[in-house]
Image (cartoon, rainbow, N blue to C red):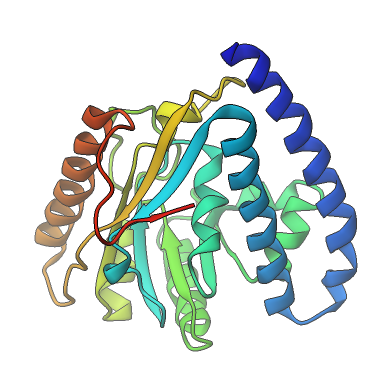
Length: 248
């Protein structure tokens, strides 16, 4: 049954994405915020599809910690849905993306129009300086800068190396860093089409204040994300709703 529902979701998801792609193309000539709103609508409908077709609910917790002004957010990354779902709760998110993703037709065009940031992972110190300069420009709009500190998707329970780029942004931007944990990969695996019923949780954690030294910041960030993530994984989608939770 899970396979049948997952296949049905895959068909509807890609049909919806094609419709959105065609409908959003004229927005390439519209103001940037229109594209952000359209991408959030795309993600919101995907959330509804997950619930109706696959029995997967999505809940955002710790909303008292969710930034609404200029901010740095460091998020766990387990699946493709991590770039869709959280778009629905940020006023104006700006994701740090791999430069290669911008080459994807429609998705790359829309991401550029939305003002997402492309990172050349092989560019070394020069790429980091460029990222910091562009991040400052985005935050002046103001926006919420979202970065995946491990740099790529990790299976549930696995921990990658936290890359130094997030520490560079934290130091140069002079802002608190809000960690965000998730168990999304349990229900939307990093690879394959299976969508397992249950509860996907995105949890905003207490912000790390600015001013920590690099090593202390990286330890604190990793500890907070991995500890909260492990708790969500152990609950396996059955954790009780918190008072700050927002089930969708």
